[in-house]
Image (tube, rainbow, N blue to C red; front, side, top):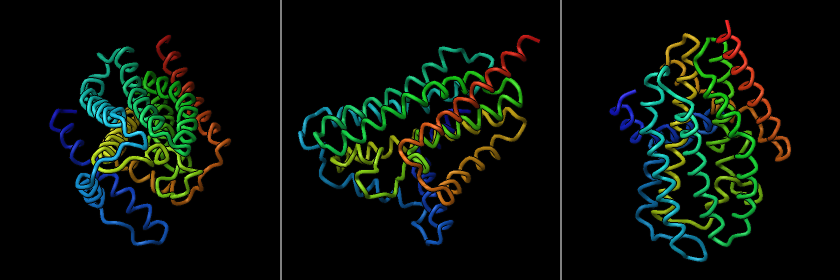
Length: 275
């Protein structure tokens, strides 16, 4: 993965979001928005007056910039982590997971700073879900690409984690307007204007980074990475169209499945190394 490809991902992140939204709508029998709609939305938000919660403190602005910076840093680090799996160390993997956690922490602080009850409710759910997916996230990356079997298991675990990280059904629903069920969007209810555009673009970059990670790990099974990337993108709207959103207390079962897949992948990796 080259620097030019990273720049392409920075530009195409909103396009991926538009493709996913359009595919989900068409699978549900609706015409759906055009692929370029996220670009229009970002331009619209940039033209509006900034708003950073009821308190109006500078923390919301700083947190949005910090989260956007972590997302860009993740994409910049991807060529190093994906370029040569032999030279990739445990510290590189831990640093990648830590950057995802830093971006989430910035959003949590910004949501709490908004002094909104709905945002605080969403923060509690976000933290709970983050606590149960970070371990399988780390394990899946550590077991990636060692053998074809471990690559398939680790890639499957990462796809489940992708649903958590990008706030997708059955974990969350980006299209809902019911405050009591919002998680990702619920934390940003009090934000508008350029600061909200920064949050949205940051989430789109994180989503693209996760898609690339899933495709890279699955490619360790012998499949072309481009095919794995297309399959990962296509699988998301299929899951959203044909799977209902899970009850809040059932979501940990999905994280448990990711953990079991990641542990199995790591076990195969360890057994293969002993031979």
